Length: 64
Image (spheres, rainbow, N blue to C red):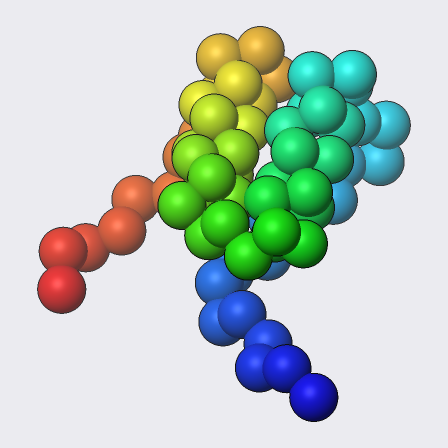
C-alpha cells in the first residue's frame, strides 16, 4: 500500500481545453514515475494557463 499525496486537488473543468488536458496527463505521468518535482511544475503551469486563458484567478496563499 502506498501513501497518498497530500497535495490539493485541482477542481475539474467540465469541458477542459486541450492544453489543460495535456498538463493533467503530464502530471499523471510524472506521479506514476514518482517525479513530484515535475508533477508540481505541471500544476503550476496549469494554474498559470487557466488564469491567462480561462480567466480563473489563482489562489492567494499566505506564507507559512
